[in-house]
Amino acid sequence: MTIDAADEPSDQLLHLDALGALVSEEPDRNSDDQRRARKEFEQMVSERSKMVLEIAALRREREHTAALLLETEQLLADVISAERTQHDLAVVRLSEQERLGAALAEQVERLQQDIAALRASTSWRVTAPLRAVTRLLGPTR
Image (cartoon, rainbow, N blue to C red; front, side, top):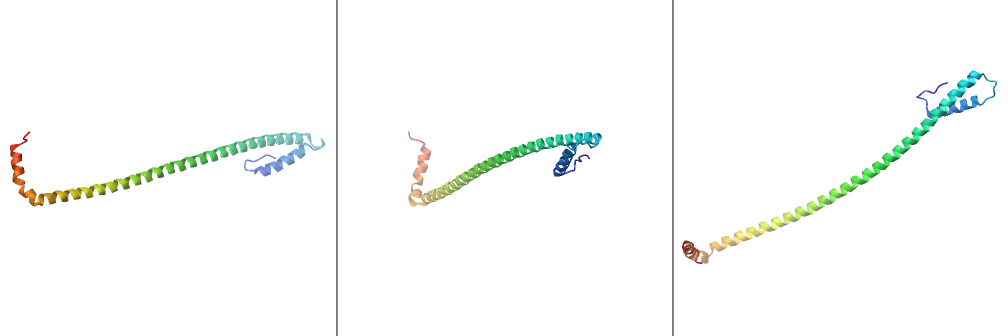
């Protein structure tokens, strides 16, 4: 009996036990059968050992991958947190700039109104000729 690659490991272990029992039976069995059984038994033991090593390697790889995944998740969480902090700071700065912009617009509007009121005043109109003469004469210094 040979092991097929599609056999389940539990089926292989049952077969391995049966072969072990066959190999350890009394010498009244046919020696060719015993040699064949012993050879198959040794192959199965070897294959089982390889499978155990492969399973152990796969478990280590899975644990390593899980650790990397956790580390990656933590790094992503840190990046997301930093991005949120930067976003929040940008929102605060934008809000402050909008507030300052609105305050400056109000100040410009008030100053333009003050200039318009000054130019519309009687004193500004009365002193217009004096300012014109001063401009014509140039700086007196």
